[in-house]
Image (cartoon, rainbow, N blue to C red; front, side, top):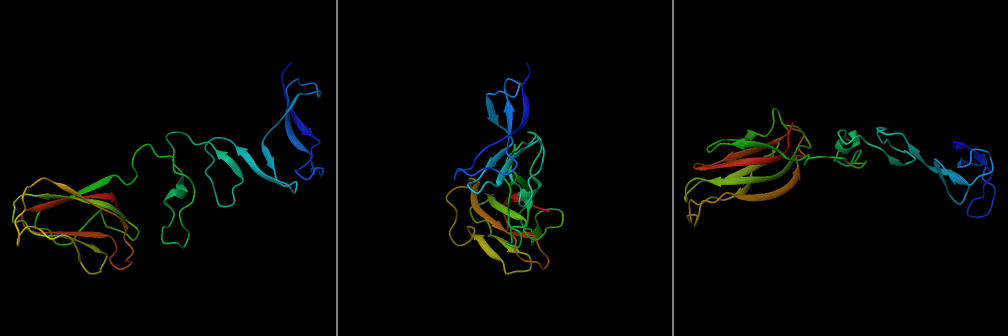
Length: 200
């Protein structure tokens, strides 16, 4: 006989009756049991505190779901919430690839090239791959919106580089400026860069 689902009497951790009972699976389907709790977890006050939801329900603030099934090709929209602290990040990502793995090349001799189509506040700069082409190459700097330039590589103009291998400068920073927002990269002569992150 197939199993059935119904409410049965139950008690909480303080041995008090749970209002409305517990939703349970009756393995026998006859009402005689054995019973297995289904769908809810109950706290010591007898309040239902967690549920199991169907696949592809995106989590929301105040969600009581223990597990929200996500399609492997989907993502949690809340992962991209405002990192400024106003709303904060919430939710767990289900990401098949590095979500901060976008890149944009910056040729040598560029002035304040915006990373991304337009650049935006809270764009993420994971790092810069510096690619020197000459031992006396110029410097590389970044700018957060309309802020002051920050030198991340001083170049080899004063003391020549000993080799020309590309190297990574890890950063892991968000653009915080709201004025002409976005990350901007300036490269000197004989040095190019590859900006890696998430850009608008």
